[in-house]
Image (cartoon, rainbow, N blue to C red; front, side, top):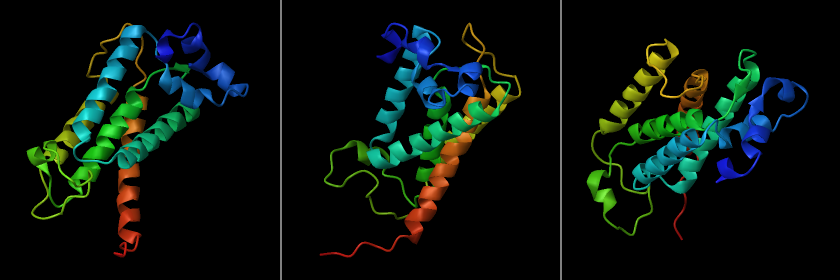
Length: 196
């Protein structure tokens, strides 16, 4: 775990003074280190839970693409916000990954539901789309947007002893949603694969 490597969290954390002197990599490296071990463990547990929850419905490639979009969004907001003096953590990217997955799943005409938890020969995200859109991705997305909105308004207290940079959650969520929408649009523009 990167958090336990001596000196690495401090070296990889985003600090505006270092960034402005050319340490551009901190925009990405800061998302892989944390401000404390409990902070790192909470983010790691969230990452594993989200991956486990989404595995039956989304392929690894789709999940990684959504996560990459969220990481880029968080990097952009910490780079462009002069009020962000320092940053470390993965929670912004996690918000985007989960939100983007909800949008991706909401765009399907059907949901594999509990049947997806049983072993099948089909790869994730290759089930037939039939029936009305499922409600649960929309509910997940609404709850996530509500959480980020309350955080942004200062109505949700922090569970941490340090200042939480709430714009990273909003930026991660927005970029995860954008990544899902762009991926959906790209999938519609691609010609269907021809059988052998």
